[in-house]
Length: 149
Image (cartoon, rainbow, N blue to C red):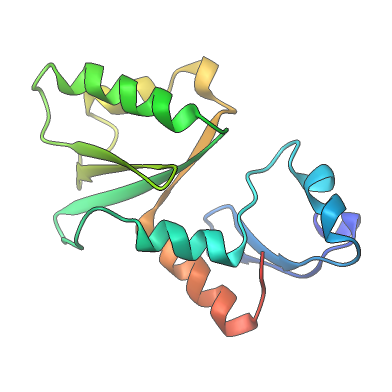
């Protein structure tokens, strides 16, 4: 799909669904071309996501960053507060620089009250989430290849 709309140096990062590429032509039209179905972040935005992570690395925990429609990170934060009030999990969440971060114990990602909220059909095309380790790999690949998006 990316090549068919004129992108070059198209590659995926592992099997994560993350694509890096070099745009060809008028950058002002890039959003019109791709944003109707994708969440697009450039290299500076990826770096910002990594800089804003509110949790230190810990081998017992996964940290996810959510890339959302504008303002939807607030909805996620509100939903998290509702589920966290039950006290059934030791997961945590934080809003930083327009991103929602979720920390969950390894092995329980699909079993927490908040994870059940994430499967809500009405949320389907409002966000995507990535493990922060994946975001680090994406950024590293962008650095290695010189790609900006």
